[in-house]
Length: 349
Ligand code: 1HN
Image (tube, rainbow, N blue to C red):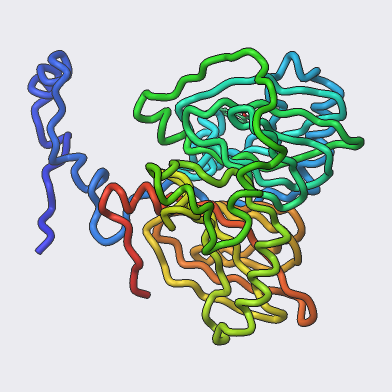
């Protein structure tokens, strides 16, 4: 079925040179590289970043670089298989750990990539999204979708660290990534207004039925509610089935950003999970607990606030190492992007 294709060396040098001079390339010597059979080529490496390795260096950045010299004080979690300076955890997903210190502000801007914040430690910081003030508590998810103004501040004490996830590698690859600076926003609405309006799943403000659906009705998803919902779902979920909740738009039920998907996974005490292989790449971040992950046969131990990258089509196994306590993971994937492009797949073993 598969025939051996001609190689570049099979062609006369003079012919190859003629092609090169004219910016032409023969397809057949490289066809299997760009279109392999059965599984996509991938350079993304299963990689784990330990928070205990990141944290002291991020705090050091706080001493070395004033916020004015950084705008966003971030250490990027760069996949070693993807050229570090291109800032990709997976081919489509950027993740970084951002530090803000008491009294600091990170100035207002908006950009074409979509972003989220997931709070790792500390309290008292906030993000203004189009002027709406979203408080940041550990485990909260805050959306800053494409084109929305956002700036950060910190009114509390002690360092605050959060995980940023963006579709930047994808937007950059299509040469569409840029930002616009803006003046500081006056705070609009009530504090945390979207969370007040869309407090409970299944209940939306009545008036929203009479208008065009908002693209981003809910900006902040508090961790306390997610954790409670997972604990409740666990009671009703068969062993071996994932206890997993997707963060969605409360009006449409669709994923909350066009490109990236977000979910929270609970591993019950002692639970081992062997999720179905998927075509999407993903980044998992440990909210609570400790355990082990096997990604395409490579094994990593994980604990609080560690983060790991999962290539497309990877086989994974997740284990909660505690026989007493549940573990909780926050997951970012590019399934929404793949679905829109028509090639998202759940794969067989
Ligand atoms: C960005 O806007 C933020 O707003 C953080 O906090 C990280 C990385 C690349 C491009 C834009 C932020 C970012 C970013």
